[in-house]
Length: 356
Ligand code: ADP
Picture 1 (cartoon, helix red, strand yellow):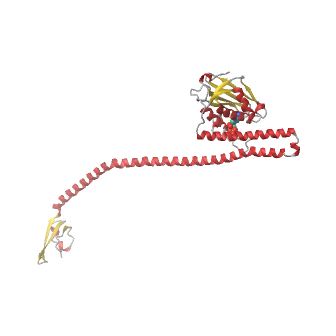
Picture 2 (picture 1 turned 30 degrees about the vertical axis):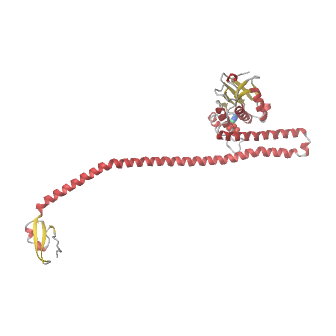
């Protein structure tokens, strides 16, 4: 019946068989010890002990266990706390870094979208700018085939001049596009040489629409500088082209120069539409045009002044503007004329800055 076991436990003496024991105590610790003979239980000893007597020991043991458990928890907490706090601050840092990376990623995506849009706008504007002079030249050539025009020398000359202007416009546009791509590919080597300023203006202005008639050069004959001719020509062409383009037909564009000991300045003054002061820096940015409407009067890609500034700076100089909206602008191009490191093919420093 007991299967070799000795059951024990605490009894609150509710069972009917415990009526006699209830007089001993409220609770008893019982132990049943079976007596086996030849493998079968022949008798059972029942032992009862007042539970109150061992309860003190049990409670003390439970307290000890509870205190040990509590101390264990505290030790565990103290040991784990720095590890947990380190892990949580590392997680916080990683989270902040991830947020930062995400924000940067979103910025890059927005920039790429913006660039893509600018590229599409640029391709559209460049195609339009390239097609306009070509369409005009084609129109002039077709008109000149008409007998009434081909027989009229004056009309023919006018058409030829207009065709030349449009072809030069195309040429300047392509030169600017090539210069812009050179800027991106890396700097063109600087070649310093003696430049007679009056001769320089004479070579640049006739290539511009009405340049010969409108540009007035106020520079003493023989004024010369040692500088990078190619860069100076590109800068001047763009600034003079703008001065002619953004001022009334027939109004003069004045050019003069100041030669210092180690730098020279060229001033290009027009009586045109002028530029508002809050645009004075922006006009030198790539593709920036003050009038960005589709109905703008003047052609262009917004590259001229950007190139002028980049090329001036490459040569160690700069370009700036002073302007009164509605009254005109003065662009000042400064450039060094005694470069410290001269190209071997260039002219020696003793000639730099010469004014005659
Ligand atoms: P664009 O091809 O449009 O002429 P630029 O880079 O040469 O490009 O010039 C940038 C902008 O600066 C022009 O679109 C124009 O709004 C303004 N600008 C340049 N030169 C002048 C000027 N002389 N007078 C008035 N506005 C000018």
